Image (cartoon, rainbow, N blue to C red):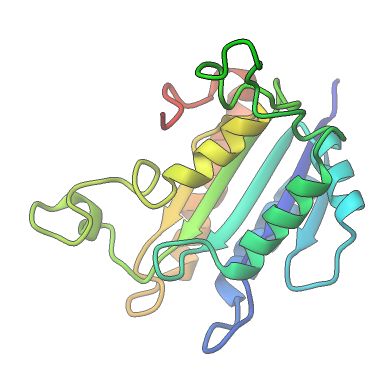
Length: 212
């Protein structure tokens, strides 16, 4: 049986009033799931710890699937995760993450974003929010009926598309500050991992669109 290689990134930054505990729990749950399931090998990084950019590039190149876990702060990923991406992707230029922006000098108006080196690889993202799910779905509520993936995380998805990776369906955890139900969230998440990686072939469960 072919072993699938999973690289887990905990972007749950410890900063201010945030202890990063929820995303640490989700990341640890992901790592344990794959360690306890035959056919998978796991590497992981916590952006709160020191990391070697060259080693992180190696982890991306090694992986079949990259799994990001991040809170959303002020409608963006935390600055620690953003710095990690900036540093690691810059290190990965012509080293396995991307070669160029994909354009050619003879016609620079086309093919932007096609210079990635990670075609055939997949990624998944989970995010955690203070906002309730209804803030994204009800008419008149804050996000104007725009989903997480097509709204706040649109740029995050295009960033991964730039490398050549394609998305697996992720999961978004809502209302984790004022109305948390971590036990239920963990059960739903473990079911999501089981459905995505055990009951299906990951080659067959990419999202039908690419947030473009």
